Amino acid sequence: ENRVLLGYRDGYTLPENATLVVPPEVDTIADGAFMNQKNLSAVSFDKNATVSVIGKNAFAGTSITSFCAPDTLTTIGEGAFEQNVKLAAVDFSAAQGLKTIGRRAFAGTALVQVSIPRGASLGDEAFSGCSSLISVRVAADYTGTVGKDVFKNVASSAKIYVLSEAVKAKFAGKGINNANIVVEECVVRVSRD
Image 1 (cartoon, one colour):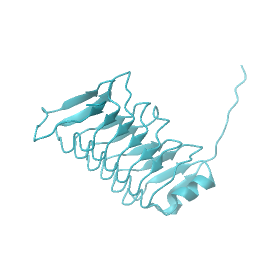
Image 2 (image 1 turned 120 degrees about the vertical axis):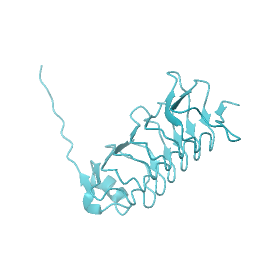
Image 3 (image 1 turned 90 degrees about the vertical axis):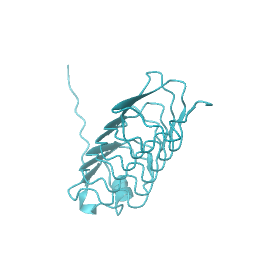
Image 4 (image 1 turned 60 degrees about the vertical axis):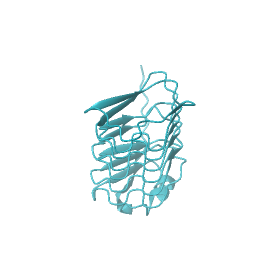
């Protein structure tokens, strides 16, 4: 409806191990579209995808195991994947225009590692309760903002890898021990042919 994928309503249950393929004519996945559809185990996007917004709680409480963001994605809404306890991997590498990862968007998931794109602002508690999260890599030229308690209650050994003190300062006090925010050296190698 109007390029919005509404999902399933009125008690409809998907078949076991269902896969959702988002068609190219969809720009937005509606708030709560697939919320608590425990049988939804995978979501993918058509190669001509135009999805720019994943709404509030759109995939919360599903059984999706991994998520690869399309290059058109700009917004992941509040609680979009919250309490998706099987979600162990997300890939934002194609979504370089991602601007917002909403409040509690990935809270309570099984993520192990995540890379934060350059301009993605992180809402409060965006990755809180991800007790398996051990590695966060932040884009070298990160320009986004970081909300409160973004990494609250993640693995005690979790590390955030950044490339500057300025970016480190953005993540300080956001739910992870400041000693676990590591400024890495950027090494450029030039090869001679």
